[in-house]
Image (cartoon, rainbow, N blue to C red):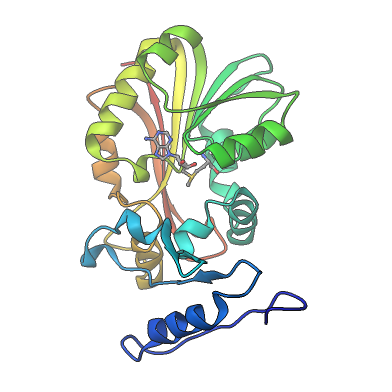
Length: 272
Ligand SMILES: C[S@@+](CC[C@H](N)C(=O)[O-])C[C@H]1O[C@@H](n2cnc3c(N)ncnc32)[C@H](O)[C@@H]1O
C-alpha cells in the first residue's frame, strides 16, 4: 500500500474484540509509507442515558508513528458543510424550516433577518430578498456559506451577543433553526435576552428543534435522543425556557415532517 492508488481498510466487529489493536498494528506497518495514513475510528453513538459525549471523541486524537489518527464519529462528519447539506436533504430537513416560516412569519423583501447558528446558510434559500446576516461559530460552515452566497447574504463567524444586537438592531426576524437543542439553559437565556434588545416591536423569533413527547413513536424518540444536540427538550421545557424573555405567540409540535420518524417543536416568539 506504499504505492499506487489510495486504499481503504475497514475493520468492524463487536465491542472488545480488538479492532483498535488491529488498527494499531496496521499503523506500525504502514507508518514508514511515504503516503499519509488516516485512521478513522467511528466509535459509537451513545444515547443520552449514557451521559454526554466527550469532545475528545469528536476531534483529532493525535499522531503516532508518523501516522495521523483522526477519531471521528457520525457527529464530527457532519462538521463538513457538504455532508451536512447532503444529510439535511436526505432527511427532508428543509420542510420544518419552510413550514415554520410560512405559518409563523410574514417575511417581506427588505426585512432584516438574523440567522443565529446559520450553519452553511441553508435558510438563505428559503427567504425572499432580505437583508440577511448569519452568525455561525463554525469556521468551515461560514467559509462555505460566504462562497455560496457571496452577493446575497452576510455571514459573521461567532456567537450572537449583546454587542451584535446593538450593532444590527432593529431586526424583523430572528431564526434559531436547529440551535436551541445544542445549547444549555443558561446559553438559551442569554441568547434570548440579547435577541430581545434589538428585536423590532413587531418582530419575531422562530425556533425549530427536535423534541421529546410522551406520545411519539419509539423510533421518533430514538432519533431525538441520538441527535447531535445534547439538549433535546420537551415542548413544555422549550416554552418554559423562552417565556421569561419573550412571549410564545405560537407553537406547534409536529410529527412526520421529515422523511425519518421525528417530532419537531416549532415556536414563534415576540415581545410581550
Ligand atoms: C443543526 S445546526 C443548524 C444549522 C442551520 N440553522 C440550519 O437550519 O441548517 C446547529 C448550528 O448551531 C450552531 N451552534 C451551536 N451552538 C451555538 C450557539 N451557542 N450559538 C450559535 N450557534 C450555535 C452550530 O455550529 C450549528 O451550525
